Image (cartoon, rainbow, N blue to C red; front, side):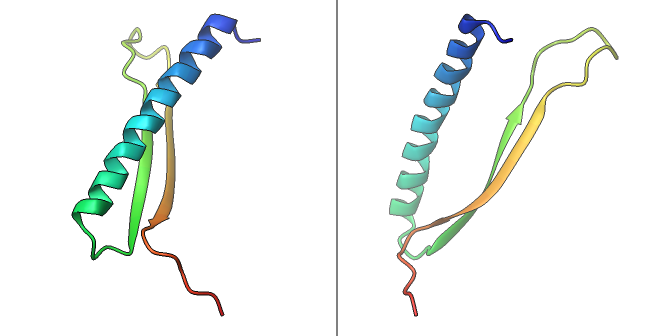
Length: 74
């Protein structure tokens, strides 16, 4: 079971990332009004300094689209 302090640290880090990423994406779309879609890859990179060969660093990736205009249905 994960310690409450660790859980709070994870949530704080992810919330900070989410707010900053949202701002950056919105600004990018605003600066490039001809874009109709962004294809993004979000990568989590573990930069912890582990003892050599003892731990596989954490990596995690999510890919997806951000539409900047509503898609017409039907």
